[in-house]
Image (cartoon, rainbow over all chains, first blue to last red; front, side):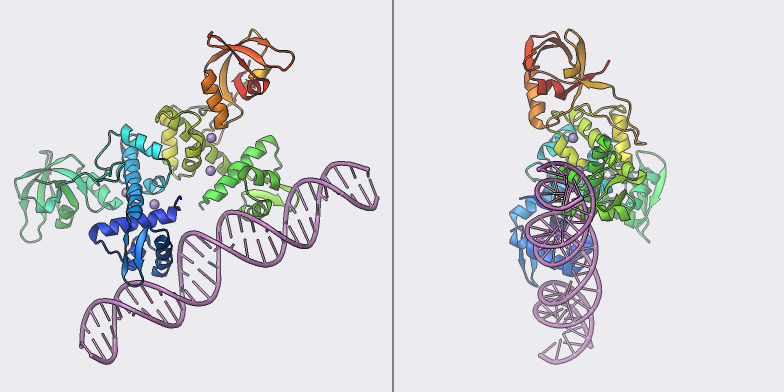
Length: 219
Length: 219
DNA sequence: TAAAAATGTTAGATTAGTCTAAATATTATG
DNA sequence: CATAATATTTAGACTAATCTAACATTTTTA
Ligand SMILES: [Mn+2]
Ligand SMILES: [Mn+2]
Ligand SMILES: [Mn+2]
Ligand SMILES: [Mn+2]
């Protein structure tokens, strides 16, 4: 009854894709997993036989309840391990994703639930992504991109959309972290760049694309 | 340059066998890993090509320096994770081996060294087995089986030889744990069974085989 | 709506790790 | 030391996961 690492990675990828659109395509999976579409087709047949997805040739696929549960569980484990690495092992937020890619496949419900407890049943990982509870339920997260906040309003950083190490390191460099208070002083009409300050500190400039990738607690 | 889980398990098994005898045999590996000798032969050829072992058809094999380093590193990771699970996650000593079998393959030197530090650079795992340092060096452990201790002498439990869950649970049940002080009151001449007390508590009887599988700090 | 483009599937290979059955080499023993 | 027993290797096969090349279907667009 246990799934291979590969199957788990497919189900995780499919779950993430189905957050956008219920019906998932072969090429999208191939792109995310960085493998060939032909390979994906083979695996889809296997997952369908195991009743983890509903699949019809040329028509796309969707997760069954069973498949969704596995995908969500892998995400839960990934995010709990990431938080563990940051909070307990003192890693930076740009160092934990790769290690969590491995740790997410460790099989022990007891371990993951104790990790959850040890971390105080957290609602979000170090990048602000929500952590489902042991029943696979996500808490409501009400966040919006900083780019949607009006000038003069003070908002609190809750996470990031872009997760790349370079982006995370850039935020470190300009001194923006989760929990920081951001005040928008002005938005340049020409290119939508923002003049902001962090925790009442000195002013910094960020581009529109950066503002779009920072999430703040929504009002 | 990275090795598969399978290769890592072979090198770990070979290292353990070579602690007894430098020259390791095909069937011993097959027995430990619970696979067929024919399968082992195939893998030995691959490990030899990678210069992880010295192998000659029909003659047995031994680890190269490179192969030993990998085997020892897997053991280091296994034992550090076991100790982590017991000390930080509150698992019992009979619950951790299976999870550590998975965790030992996580690849991150940084993580394992921080784990080592977090645990205070421990010298032994929850079963008393020695933990090599980051250079693959084992500390000197001077332990002897309880069966070799003379009556009336007080000795301190340092570990176990037999590692099975049933044995560990049996020790839990009769109240013997690492660090406990054992006093041998008498040894039955007929079957070598021992009448002992733990931490000055009430007397318990253990068989010769149990006494042989408990390690105490050697004098 | 017919042709072109994009998307998806099938066919045939390859690699890692495993197996069983048969062959061969080494070791033990009468 | 010749033979029997044991240990080891080889040969041939299988499964999971991957690939490339060719073919099929669906979607887009002129
Ligand atoms: Mn991640
Ligand atoms: Mn993964
Ligand atoms: Mn163990
Ligand atoms: Mn292992």
